[in-house]
Every structure is written in C-alpha cells, then in structure tokens.
Image (cartoon, rainbow, N blue to C red):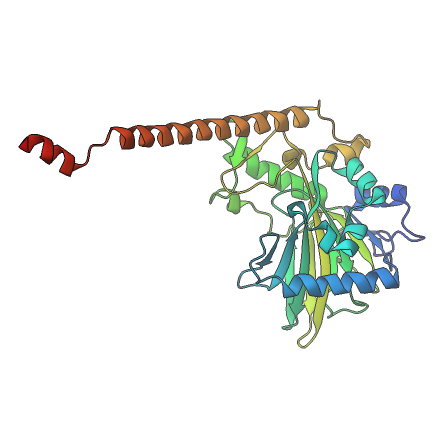
Length: 330
C-alpha cells in the first residue's frame, strides 16, 4: 500500500498557473490542475464554439468529423485544416504564448501543437466514462471543464498521479518484444495488442479531479487516466486538445521507431529537465523516418507517372479494329 499518496491538492496549481509550477507538477505527477483558469467571458465563447463543433460533426466538413463510433458521439476539429478564423476562442485558449512555452519544454518542436480539438459529450448511464489507461501514442493534452464537476458521479476526469514510469515500462516491454528493425507498425493487430488498459496493482490511488467550470487540466498521456462514474441522467461537456510530437499524426501503415519521442515519451525531461533536441537520438531517428516517408512518396509518384506514361503510349499506338479490317479488305 502506498503511504502519503498524492491528493488533488498536490496536483493543483493556483494563482493563475505559474509555468514553473505547472512544469513541476507534470514532471512529478504527470498532471496539473488549474481551477477556474478560463475567465467567464472566454468560457461563454468556448461553450458557444463547443456547440458549433457539435452541430457541424455530420455536415461533411473535412475539418470537422464525428468520432467515437458506437461508444461515444464526439466531434473532432482538425486545426491544421485552416479553421482558425472560425473558432477564435479555441485558438486563444489552446494556442498562445504560455501554451507554446510549456509545449516547447515538455514535448519540443516540431510538434502538432493542439492540432486536434475534441468536443466531448457524455450522457450518464450509471457507469464510468472510460476505464484507466495510458495512450498508445504519446502526447500532451489540455482539457477544459465547461460545467462544474464538483462531486462524484458527475464524470470527473482523474489520474493515478506519478504512474508514468509503470506505463513506460509496460510500453517498452511490449514494444521491444514485437518490434522489427527497431520499429512497430501502427494499426496492425500487434499494435492494438499493447497492454495499455490493464491497470497495475502498484499505482497510487485514483485522484478524481473535482473542479469548477473553466478549470484547465494538463496531463501527459503516460499517466494512467480515466473518466470516472457518470450518474444516469447527468451530462458532461468538455473541450480537449491533443499535442503530438513530430510533424504529422501517426496513422495506419506508419512506423513508430524506437529512436523517437513516441518511445522516449518525455522521460528525459521529467528526470533531467532537458527538453527535446533535433540532434538527440530521438531527433535524428524522427528525421530518418521523415526521409524514409519522403522516399516512399517520391517512389510512388514516379511509379504513378510511369503507369500514366505507359497508358498514354498504348493509347497512341492503339489502332481500332475497324481500321485494321478496312486495311485488310483493301
């Protein structure tokens, strides 16, 4: 049993959210809570943009899509698709100098800075919203409560503070056991076999983050986290932003190399305070993967152009049968 286990007070940063205090909380606990961080007027605008995102999720807009499958009905915004002017409040909260300073320290650049925004809507069914887990691909998340969540049963987000080390141990044991040529293929059955949802017995107790509307929660996705119990008839509305390392999101068919931030997962910064460098083994590994993808793209382009050229030549040399028949009759 863990004595002197961290509490909500331990992971809470007050007084406007000093960046050094936020960074200290993230390094030690994997999460930082800033109660009532968003001003009321700004929160009203954020709520309106949450409504706007939700309303557009089925409209066929390539920048806004419905996500969640049969489990949830969420809306996701792709900030890289030229949507900034349409969602000024989201831009102001999730992409500003303070956010960039923190992201530079924790994740490093280049990165996909809060490139995905999720407008989540959960309706209570007398069960937990999501069981405890760490994310398959490492990232830093920013979450805003749009309504008060001040008591249990309202679907509060929560974490097992300081559990990042156990998540990384499990991740690397899994990775090293299945990788080929120093990488794992994303989207395969092996990739989805990652044991990221099996809760260990040696974690600090779960801390339910009870906080007022406008609270900001920042967390490293290697900390075991979950959405807690939501009573029947209750609703939960949240905005959540995701920052991924690198210049593109990993998708089906991509490779997750050992020499990358997806394997290192912020551990060096937590232990030493040193941020990501392009000249580190992770930086060089990510550059190598970028060059590999460029080569594949170039090869595919050359192949496509070659096929098009051959088809053009065939069309030019093709003699219709009726022409051949007339020539024979002559």
